[in-house]
Image (cartoon, rainbow, N blue to C red):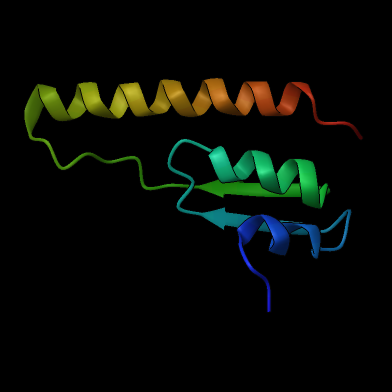
Length: 80
């Protein structure tokens, strides 16, 4: 048993292949990349908003930009 997700990530074998389902803004993706050091990590999210019309589209775009920025910062420091 582990106390939290970060502790769990350190128990994963380095160089493994995995997926994170429900990425949201990629905060835990960074933890997985830094602590588990996967060979390949698939990041999956449904990218929808509960808001109708243009407000939903704008919310979706803001979420996508935050995800892209977080992922770029994460991958910049990822060592092979």
